[in-house]
Image 1 (tube, one colour):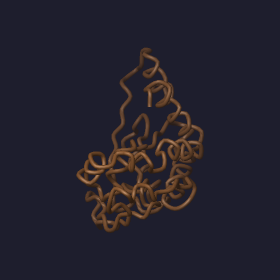
Image 2 (cartoon, helix red, strand yellow):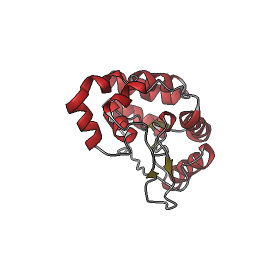
Image 3 (cartoon, one colour):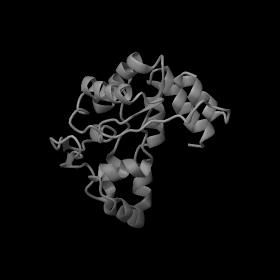
Image 4 (tube, helix red, strand yellow):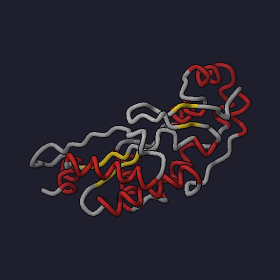
Length: 193
């Protein structure tokens, strides 16, 4: 079996020649531009001959467009350092506007996915991290849970007024190369997301 046949069979509950395997993690030094992120992901994928690739994007790509300021830690295994964030109070959630998926850090991520698709897309599937709305909210306040919980307790409607993360996710996934779109559809249809 090749990599795609193995994954397809496993997802359909059919017999496989071996259990499909992959592993992932951040390379915090190399995730700051599309080219180096794609190279790091493809090198890791090829080095260990994984069956599929789980793309680990820049840890903050999904919130930078809203004004979250982050800087690299300078270390391969240490997460970026958060600076200023756009959310200081519950009312700030209402000021957020939908992002364009092909601009800024989201656009860079799409470039990285296109490069990855050119490198491994014929031979293997790859899947991109898509964060849930509360995960995005946590990063919008500097990767801290308490401000999100405080908003939920004090003014739940303010958080609901923020642009629909699902709308942004769908717009982003529509820009993905073919196999990325297929994985997004798989998650929506089979896994109920």
